[in-house]
Image 1 (cartoon, one colour):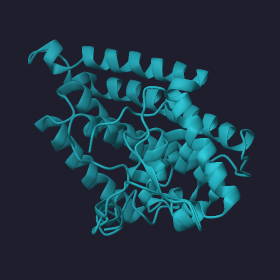
Image 2 (spheres, rainbow, N blue to C red):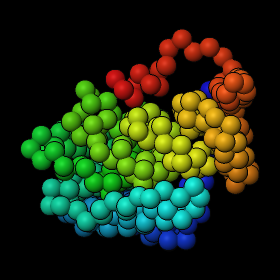
Image 3 (tube, rainbow, N blue to C red):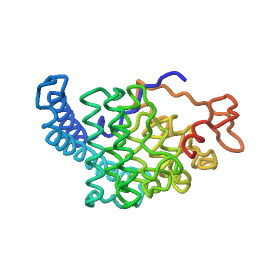
Image 4 (tube, rainbow, N blue to C red):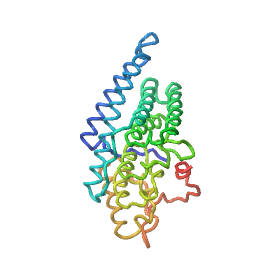
Length: 291
């Protein structure tokens, strides 16, 4: 598939998110300055790990918190308005420990490049530690803040050519999987999609959210055909819903002039159906998402 320009997200459109993104960028630069590559083998990089991780943690936490507040404001004030509560951002002790693990992974990415042996080894350690934690404390990663920070690391990994995903099938891992309550929360769904490289996280959303026409309008407005390709056609099967989806789709490409639509109508009567225009015998994306 031809590589498509990524949609504008909250960092591109919301002042608070832009500010926290700049703060995280500065923290990332400071972390890179403390890397072994800069200080050398005889430097004190190892002794600076805790300081660097704390700095990155503060930046990632601020960005995640700002994204949650902005997404909640958008979903509850811009039509079609949803009546949803903002997710909790206060972390439990176990969730703080999980976030620290995620930040260790991010520091390794900054110091050694996302797909370096050092960063991949750290990812494996973090993965194992989160597995152990969630078996004892199942709610350790059940925080949108933790999930968004994990997604930041996954995004860097994927951008470098890796295949890590922000969520996984339940059979694959005991944390951040398809059993997560986050995948049944509209604000979490919006934030996770907004912060991702692509729309693959949509395939992990609960059936209730995938059937929610109002939420789908917000998601299509955000990501265009990348989301519309996954929205069940019966969601916009009636005339009113079809017009609404066509409207937000046009608005998306108007708001993202560097992007190009790539779906086409396969049918208009008795209901509107969008598709790629070719037969897919195996739904690979769905198989990967659901395991």
